[in-house]
Every structure is written in C-alpha cells, then in structure tokens.
Length: 85
Image (cartoon, rainbow, N blue to C red; front, side, top):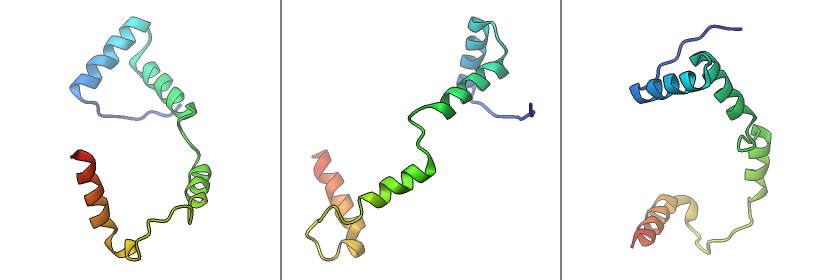
C-alpha cells in the first residue's frame, strides 16, 4: 500500500468520519471503498471508448449554417438564451 495525503472540506471530513463510525472501519478504508466503487463504475468510460464515440458522430449532423466553425460561440450563446426563455 502507498501512503498519500488528501484535503477535504469540513463537510466532507465530517461525513467521512460519520461513515467510518457507522461502518466501524477506518476513514482510509472508507476512501479506498469509495475509490474502488468509482473506478469500477460502469459510468466510467475508458478513454478509447470516449474517443471512438466522439469520432463516430463526425458528419452525422448538419446545422445548415456555412459559418458554424467561425461563429460557434455566438450560435451556442443564442441557443442557451432561447432555452432559458
């Protein structure tokens, strides 16, 4: 095992201490369990899969605009404003 040091907010520390007490395990073990769960989660997508997914959508959509690569920020801002209205 490797020793490491982390910084937590007061709220995180309090919750970690409570979880540790409830489960009757060390705070370090709570963190190891949380990390194991997070790293093995199906929500964590491998880098290669993210790249493959991103590349698979190239050319699938057409905005109909000829200047999208130049004015993308303006179009995005307009879309967000319309969504909020």
